[in-house]
Amino acid sequence: MKQLAILISGNGSNLQSLIDWEKQGMLLAHIAIVISDNVNAYGLKRAKQAGITTKVINYANYTSNEEAEKEINEILPKNAIDLIISAGYMRILTASFVSRWYLKLINLHPSLLPSFPVFNAIEEAFNFGVKVTGVSTRFAESKLNAGLIILQETVKISNDDTINSLTNKIHNLEHEILPKTVNIVASNNYKILDRKVILNSE
Ligand code: GRF
Image 1: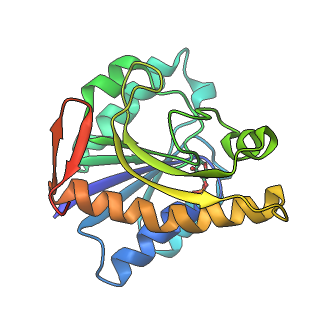
Image 2: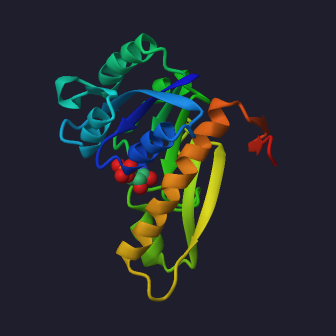
């Protein structure tokens, strides 16, 4: 069973979705550790409630992101980690970290990449006036926003949507698309052709 490390910074609703899928026997991997850069992240409580090991990396204790990542890179092999899931991790991971974990580091983003590759993607899409936005999962790459797309699903923005109603739609979709992505990658149920990630089920 592939071992997962989940990187979080906040609420951890996507972590909770993965925990729930694993509890229901639907996740083709095991959540071995949750790592947060934020000691107050509610996601840490979710992990503890689920009996999952947690680790806080306080970036203020390090002189650089590289230094902080050195500790992460020590923790991961100690937990025999196969895949890293970045779900709302608000730190920029360095190019060396990302290339070391290439095709093993999955990122979740609340837009149809490459559109709105920004932290406040939902708000940017809403304010831009697009009719459709969505959720993407991708293999993180060191070149900014170049990651190969694994899954994408759309969300229609209706005229009576607000930022809040759209955010809820996006988060609900994230909670489905992320575990599905984990299952695809954990079971090697894909191949890569040029820039395309082709699912064996397609
Ligand atoms: C999600 O919308 C994710 O796409 C974005 O940050 C949010 C994290 O939410 N990068 P949560 O902490 O999983 O609830």
